Length: 314
Image (cartoon, rainbow, N blue to C red; front, side, top):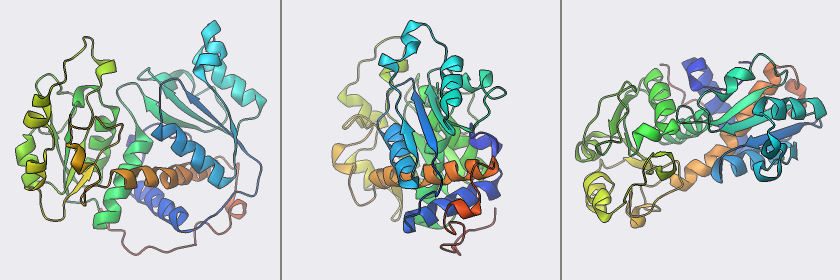
């Protein structure tokens, strides 16, 4: 794994490996022994993903190189390629990139000699979010295989939906999509069902927000969306006994989900955010070891701290 661009590049065994390493980091406060520099090149707004990477990097002992698009040389016409090469040249050991282009990484992969992580690519990929979602589900059920999982909301404009459908199917889950008319994406290979069927049969309801910023025309969001297509309190009562609620956030309260359900007993939304720190710690250390930037002695026995017995074969 030279760069972490898509979960599609990983085999099920490798996905479970990242999940288990993340669980180890969750239970032990471990740091790198070497001085390393990480640059987070976020060209789109972000709270959870960017801050999660920053916390993960600081927990590992990275020096975090600051980057703000508004005050960067991109305002003078500098390309993403030249920005990335600049951080590489001044000594960054790792790049995390979020960019509005669907395939921003294609121009960089063969020309950057440090590992890169995809922090979000246009409307098509969000692999670290996908990994933390799978970790959260795994913590609940001890497996991903044979679970029924519904992804509900603005499928058409969601990089989270595409990454999760591909990865969860690879891991043996049964994945369904729910969307209002016009919010579907028929290029994603998963069946559409209604939200009312989803709450009845699914172990996981993963909600997505309406992404107004990606729609060509401004949409009118009304109370009818929640009633017709969202997770209301009445629908929550019809969910399976042990089913859980996920959401990558930011949350449009009382649009895709009733505000009273955001922190209800079934909700794992803020647990997802917490898991994001440990998943990103795991991904960064896996990449750095793959590149030979760190070795097993760089982080104290981090592969052998805790042995988990819950991993199921695919």
